[in-house]
Length: 193
Image 1 (cartoon, rainbow, N blue to C red):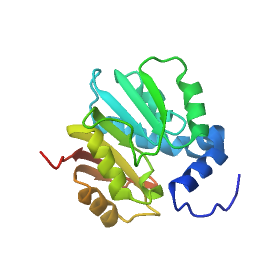
Image 2: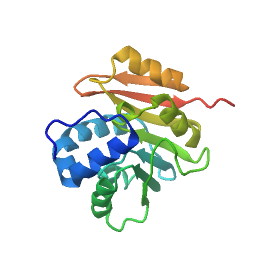
Image 3: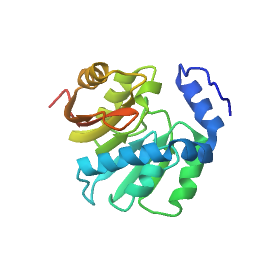
Image 4: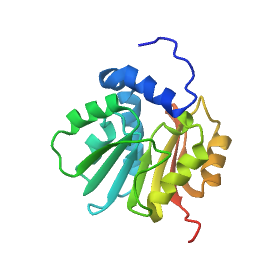
């Protein structure tokens, strides 16, 4: 693993970075911080058993492992085959969890299918963050909930909130305490609604 990685400027760079890092290194480096964000997210929204939930940038499946018992159906999507391989091992044979290798800018789902979506720490890696968020809103049901985070070293509070608002998201809760990320609990506003 490279100790001084080059800045990631596109999806291919992001994929290469996380594929090179691999699942066990990812978990060692990020699991504690991610777990804190997951706790805040799950304390902020209610997930009904019958809901369909999307985890964008699911990595090694840490959030899905926590969430899988609460939702009827959970879909994890990531650009890194290496991280998804670890997620597949972590989730085992659970029948309510699916993993998909894909770019979150081009989601392979029809419109308005998910009740909730979670996007932890991927907005700063996007070459088109407004498009990324718009694509996520496309697959959310009307008034669907989205928890999204963005690294503080990439955004300031105003720029992150402006990004969310430009993407047609209504922010119901915003926090930056004790995290490397800003975390927002949002509701999708569909253009036709």
